Length: 217
Image 1 (tube, rainbow, N blue to C red):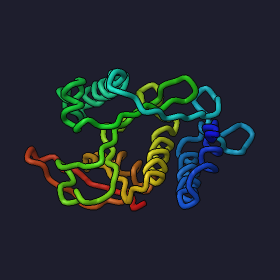
Image 2 (cartoon, rainbow, N blue to C red):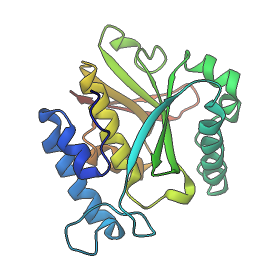
Image 3 (tube, rainbow, N blue to C red):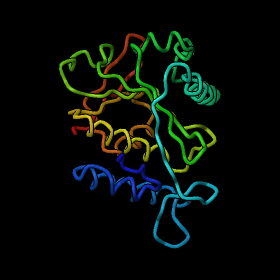
């Protein structure tokens, strides 16, 4: 019989691989400290949404027939960043065909809290563009990690990153990797809290400095 999917963050941690639990517990504690609204009124510190309901996080893979749901969240976030004067993603690659080709047919996922779509991400197993020196490693590379604008500030980013780490562990990967703009300090802090350690910083042809970070699983 298939194991029942966890209904709360506590259940998710309990069902995680033993080696992952200490880091997940630490991440949960950090999220509680950074997002007081995620604490339960009973003092037990259960994650709660802005409306005060317990987090019931589920993550599901999607096929390319549903990838527009993911891309729409990315476009929304990209527009918000552009308005703040912090453009991040090339709009050309936020169109379905270009996105699939650019990331070499990635595995795409959506995250839900109950019935509410809260975020998404893509995973690939080789990154020839940004990790050409690590092609022989057994790894997942996270791309286009996003939390919906309407769901910001609820601690979802850390919870989803913890889910991805556990997913990679369960599939026998040695590394979980990602990259981000070095000048986006909030991203560096988020990923550091999730356990990522900076490998190096690379300067792209256009002058953009990209930090490469990883978790050794």
